[in-house]
Length: 440
Ligand code: ADP
Ligand code: MG
Image (cartoon, rainbow, N blue to C red; front, side):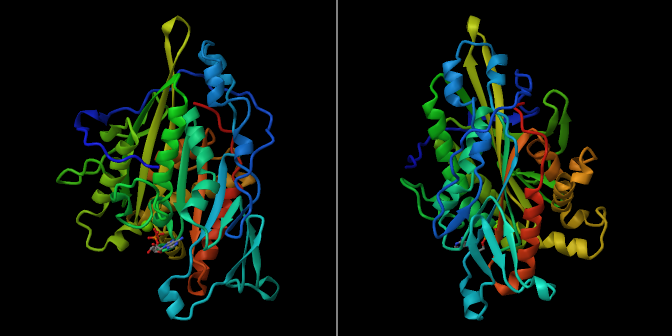
């Protein structure tokens, strides 16, 4: 149940961010925990299937309850009691239903669902006679009949939120061609979140459901004091626009490196302190509203822009001698530009420089994923610094964070080559084996 909105004046809760929250006072834990028995992402139903569980990697000796139990031990001890995540990327596929236009035109589905986190593609493009069908495997596959609730419950986002609360740097991103369901998955149909709900609408997306879950988690842990700070930005043509503070000129903001926090940050980005659920919902609303301001062709625009909604979660806990110790986890929700752009720029043989005005960020994300997933390139340079998107996601991708990739595809024959590209991209991402995630 989602609470109704209160009319509070939030203006004094806004702060401009000149530096990200400083490095947590813990040291990185290098202790490896034993894998627990692990809960399932979900029991297989007809609408989705999954294989291994992300939670099994994430759970272990560290949990919120542990913090409470160990309330008066030193922060260092608390830090080492936290889990490491052994495999820090979780990849799921969501297949949208055929839309009415596709059905009208007699387009048909070319995918099947054998179960166990697999998807089977019939009539593979460029397939030779032996390879007309191909099966791809992921952590979970959501079939067209899956509901928004199924995706929220079983894609791994709940575990990701729990890890962000514990202090990990976490990112959930939707990848796929324009029209494949990325925005539907994250936010639901346009404008839906504007109706202040008293309960979920069936189409409410992952972000709103995550907000509710986040507050449920925080409410449970009364001995820890949490501060949530949210920001919402857009990257279009490598320019960073603050969706919470458009201003009249839409002046792009610079990205800088923070020595203190050992990470990139957007200078002067507005962050909003969110004390209750309604504050987070207001951030989502304002950002989505500003995203469409002055756009003649919203679809064309959104297919070329990335949005990143970030929640920084600072937890403070009283230690011996009345000292407060703190750590900051991070949760990014990323709605990526349409992946078909990448394909066009790559097949055109363009260099990164030439692609600058098309979609550098998406290309560089692809390069980073390819580099991270290739065992031959372990220890080699990963080009995070080559685009603004990857600069901002580096702490989730780079080995000390955790990432959930939701690859969205259309089942239609007419979209098959794009869908197969997305499945291949997702398979590459699944191969990423970075260092185990550690708390920062
Ligand atoms: P993208 O953000 O990837 O460009 P959208 O999320 O805007 O794509 O989806 C394109 C259209 O398809 C929208 O009208 C959306 O409501 C619809 N759609 C996408 N996924 C689903 C789904 N799982 N169930 C029903 N409709 C969907
Ligand atoms: Mg979209």
